[in-house]
Length: 127
Image (tube, rainbow, N blue to C red; front, side, top):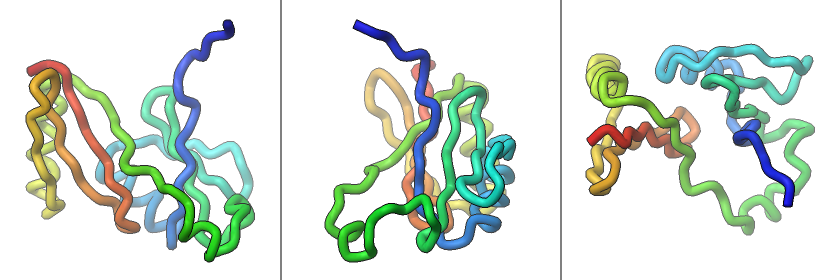
């Protein structure tokens, strides 16, 4: 059996790539280091990336009707330690970003939404 190293990227469709780049870099501190000209644009947390594709872009291979029938990503999560988890909540409050806290027993999470309504989880196992 082969093994994988880590998630390379999660591809998401957005309405405005530039707005999303700004939001993800400002709000989550992701690093914009895309290797592509045009699409996708890649934003990194360590070695894991999100790949931004415009809704109308070439990277979306299905029609609007077919995309509407597909299952979508429920959310994606970034893991952090307790200090940064607490700092994230404070920064979300300062920026006026609505965040929902959840105690899952083994971990704590906070959920926010990006400009396109994708749910993002910040989680820590330091409970």
